Length: 85
Image (tube, rainbow, N blue to C red):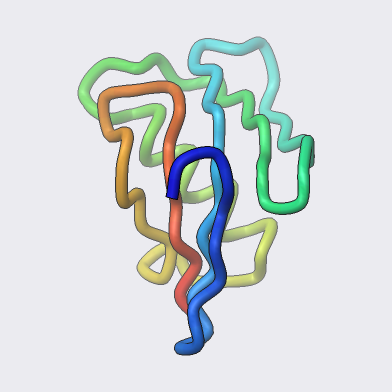
């Protein structure tokens, strides 16, 4: 799954998200078909940036936060996220 997001038949959407923690403002930019750049205000310590990233993605895609999961990259800026519809 390197480099590209995939869509499976059970209505899961996989996104490649590059998170920029500690930004001055929250901003989500689409940079490819299923690739996004996400600026979050929270610092990367104690999972705060991950929690904010999940909240922003859930809000943007009209999902509850429990339906947005980080599959890969919990400790990295480059993440693979699944949206569970």
